[in-house]
Amino acid sequence: MSRYVNVVIHPMPGPVRKYYAEVAATPEEQAQGLSGRDSLPGTGGMLFPFDPPRMQSFWMRNTRVALDIVWISPQMIVVAIERMDPQDDSPHVTTVPVAYALELLGGQAVRDGITPGSVVSIEPPVSEF
Image (tube, rainbow, N blue to C red):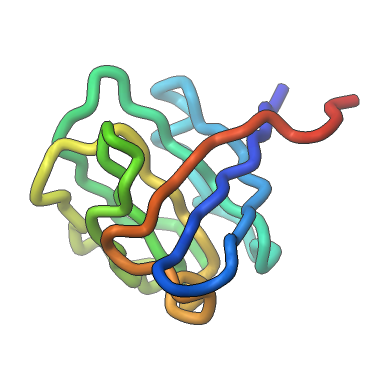
């Protein structure tokens, strides 16, 4: 059963942005990620938690849509954003240990004004049925 959270990002400057993100908590869910999916809603995403925080590497094998990956520090600050192209096996590697990675639809981070330094919080959805 999938679990969802609201990921709230405070761009500087700009309005607060909220994404409804599926949580990839287990090693199996993290290995699968968004591969095999044909779409992702503009306010949707997938959140990958890492406990303990560590260096990470992602690729796009079998992923059919372009994605942005937002790397989030243990202090809940965006440390980097990368664009990832569909079906690309090139690694996208962090330069510092991260506590989370948030995958969004390709171009969403730029459209929403998210930049390194933006503050992040994670909240439960308003209701879960």
